[in-house]
Each structure stands twice: as C-alpha cells, then as structure tokens.
Amino acid sequence: GNSVTQMEGPVTLSEEAFLTINCTYTATGYPSLFWYVQYPGEGLQLLLKATKADDKGSNKGFEATYRKETTSFHLEKGSVQVSDSAVYFCALRGGSYIPTFGRGTSLIVHP
Amino acid sequence: EPEVTQTPSHQVTQMGQEVILRCVPISNHLYFYWYRQILGQKVEFLVSFYNNEISEKSEIFDDQFSVERPDGSNFTLKIRSTKLEDSAMYFCAIGEGETQYFGPGTRLLVL
Image (cartoon, rainbow over all chains, first blue to last red):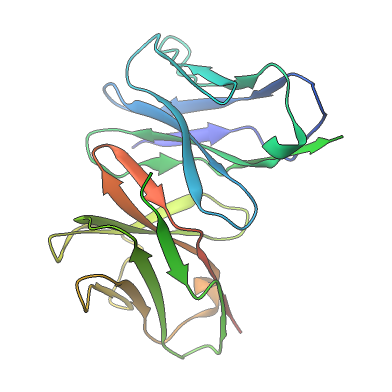
C-alpha cells in the first residue's frame, strides 16, 4: 500500500537558516505529492503540490521537487522566519481522493 | 480558499459516553472527510461522504462511528461508547477537485 515517511522532529532553527524536511514515499503508479502546514490552533493548509515527476511545487518561499528516481519530495526554504514555526505534513494521493499522510514534522524557528 | 470550522475545539468525555463532533463548511460543498491523528502518530483517514452517503471508509471506521449531515450544512461525526484509544485530534475536511481543505480540528480526550 501507499506510505509516507518524514523525518522526525522537532527541527529547531534560527531565523534566516536554511530548511530541509525530508519526505520519501512508497506508492504504486504515479501519485500526486503534497505538503500541508498546520499553524498552532489551526487546521492543515495546503502549502504546495506536484502532480508528476520533476515538477516543482512552490509557495511562500517553500519549494519541493517530485523526484521519482529517489521517491522523494523534500521540502526546502532558503531563509526561515519565526512565523514559519508549524507542523509540516507530507502526503501523497494515488488513485482515490484519499491522501496518505506522514506523521508530521514540527519546525521551531527562534529569533 | 474555502473555510471550515469545527466545534467543539476541545472535548473531554468519560469512557463509554457518546460524543458528536461537528464540522461547518462556510460554503456549499459535496465532498466531506473525517480524519484523526492520535498524538505523535500519522493523520489517518476515517471516512468520506459524498452526496449524503458514505463513499469510502477505512478499517478504523467501524460500527462505533457514524456520520451524517442532519441539516444540509453541518457535517457530524458521532462516536458511540467512546474508548480510551479514541483520544485524538479529529479533523474535518472538504474537497474541491484533488485538494482538501481542513478545519482546525477537535481535540478529544477520553478518560
């Protein structure tokens, strides 16, 4: 079946540091890949997505590239801000509308 | 982006009691979903609901659970005879195409 593995958190960074949150997946066929973000007290929000190999999703300075050869969709941002502190979920969607989520990675950014 | 609210934000209940979690999408949608996240674990799909019927459900969604849309607006998840292991964050989501929009969640604690 489908599965998503994310790096364990929390990830703690200083403001303006470079961020990478690793995500790898197992799926049959050609899934769509997503990153969701959950800010404190809020629901999951779609951050970015990619629907085919080599696509790059980007939003709010975050990027992730769909790498089929390594079955990865790592999230990156060049310079994090305190306001980026949140929990980040990697997810994939295969044949149905039901996504498979990872456990989430907590990001803490200090001033 | 569609807005989804959930009530209550927190609920504490005794084992064996029934709870009803509510989801209120601000605009009209046809696709609804419930997920849960046990602390420290993955976001898990429970059930999808389309056109006033369950369209898909996971093995977690057993006879203890039920969903309905009683007044054409609210979307509810009922848990009969709660167990300790039902303690989790429960998220409602609405669907638009391949994208899902999540509510802020209800944190349920069963004592």
